[in-house]
Image 1 (spheres, rainbow over the protein chains, first blue to last red):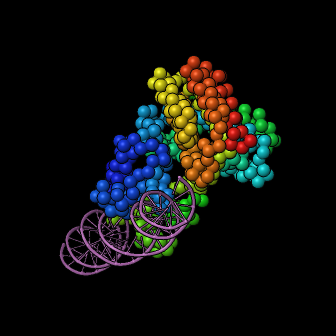
Image 2: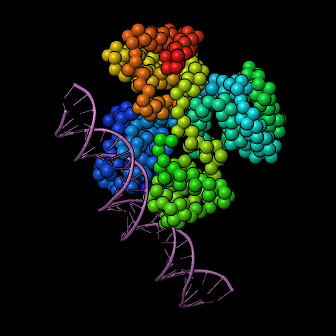
Amino acid sequence: MSQTRLSDHVYAQIVDIIKADGLAVGARLPSEARLAEMFGVSRAIVREALMRLASDGITEARRGAGSFVKSRPSDRLAKFMPSTELPTTLGSYEVRFVLEAEAARLAATRRTAQEMMYVEEGMEMLRAALLSSEPAHVEDMELHRRIAGATGNPAFLLAFDALHGDVDKIMRAGVDISRSRPPDVIATMLREHEQIVVAIRAQDPEGAALAMRWHLWEGRRRLMP
Amino acid sequence: MSQTRLSDHVYAQIVDIIKADGLAVGARLPSEARLAEMFGVSRAIVREALMRLASDGITEARRGAGSFVKSRPSDRLAKFMPSTELPTTLGSYEVRFVLEAEAARLAATRRTAQEMMYVEEGMEMLRAALLSSEPAHVEDMELHRRIAGATGNPAFLLAFDALHGDVDKIMRAGVDISRSRPPDVIATMLREHEQIVVAIRAQDPEGAALAMRWHLWEGRRRLMP
DNA sequence: CTCTATAATCTGTCTAACAGATTTAAGGCG
DNA sequence: CGCCTTAAATCTGTTAGACAGATTATAGAG
């Protein structure tokens, strides 16, 4: 804790309230004015804390009605607490394996021409990043995200963002995966992605799903041989 | 677009400033007062946006000095926000079909005794709610969520929460399934859930996956015949 | 008992102010 | 000219009070 903002403390105290009082998903929190009174701070501070709680997906505010529990913090915290960063990253592969393989299959089936262009553009961005030997983590994610979007089903993007949003947070916390990659690995990664894009372009559902599964399988191995 | 908080807009505009002006990591943002003047809002609103930016690891505030860029916002992160407002009732089934079927399979494979108890408890809650003819939507979700948790892989819960986070909102908007639920449908829903739980208890991966797929398939049909 | 109008709450937002930390500018001295 | 000390300007962190608009609770009429 470098800084001592009151809203940090209020954030933690509201989390405690939800956990201690066992507030279920959908339950209403005390009003901002009430919380301010309880913690002895101004309403503005409570609002700052609530903004972060909402940003973290724990609460949700409805105008005129109140703030409500959206996802119990104990569960959200549990996914960071027990295991270290790497296992969580690895765990996401298990989900990506089914989620993104299905996305690739559906993208191949019903992508529009515009969505295809968007995917191809993402592929170009990844290629440029990889060939310039820069950290290509963002571009990698972006391509995968565009493929999820090419299904035309926003639910895939919802799940994708949830998965990679928190992974991104974890990596910002100090884990540096972008270690030095030898040239042959770069070429391999490029080829794997290209096979996925080619299959989607050719409207080959099974090929796209298989290429995605293979790529994720290999990616997981690269992370933890 | 359920809510239009000014701080949401300010958040996006500050991200735009960082990207457009090419502010490097460590660069100082305009002061809160200046930002408030630029966007035509009060300083409190700017602070609420800055709290979320700080929570997302993009900026960092130093007391008396100013707010500084901590990490350049990626394009992916910028697109992260608007996706939260998409209603995805039917589309979510397409994702649940692969996601929860895999969760059921893995839960059957490696559930602990404690996780099994947690699932059984969820089943009891659902049974009680359904038999009392009360809206059982929350209990239904809770059982599915506990099954996702029984995989031991928190990534499944991440994806699950993302998909079902807005369901409460949708239900409140008027789609009330519980009203039009004849007794035979209740019995059917109960049986479908029981088959899933039984398969997980019996550590039958394929049976669990199949039962989940069947249940979701029927559920989708009940929603939109 | 149901429907409706009214009152009470609650979020979203603004303005004005002050303390304390930090940066900047101004001198003063070698 | 360059360096150090000091005072002024700036900035974040925080408080108080106010008002509009949305939502929920309440009381009353039929």
